[in-house]
Structure formats: C-alpha cells, structure tokens
Image (cartoon, rainbow, N blue to C red; front, side):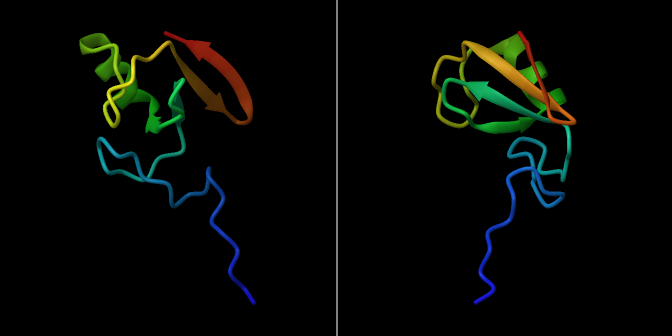
Length: 72
C-alpha cells in the first residue's frame, strides 16, 4: 500500500495565518504549532500567545535548511 504521510516540511505545507505555501517555517514553543516566520514574528509583537491555541509562547524556533536557531 502506498499510504505514506507527507513530510512535515514538504512544499505542500501551508501557514495557518496567511494560508500561503511557505518553506520558512517557525515553531511556537511549547505548543509546537507551525507558522511561516514572517507571520509569527508579526504576531509575537502583538501577543505572546500562540495564534491557534492561545498557549503562552516561550520561544519561536526557526528552521533554516535544517539549522535550528531560536529567536524571540
């Protein structure tokens, strides 16, 4: 059976805020929801909670070509 799931960082991933297919993906910590970098950075300037679940965000982890860096 050919029922493999789509990898998390595939080209088909869509940001839940802007609804665009993006490759610059950031993870809100600790809830691990995914957003494009621009959207979550703009959101974080307004609110310190996840736009999806409202959990208080401690950090935003940005993956760039497999390199994990942490920004605020």
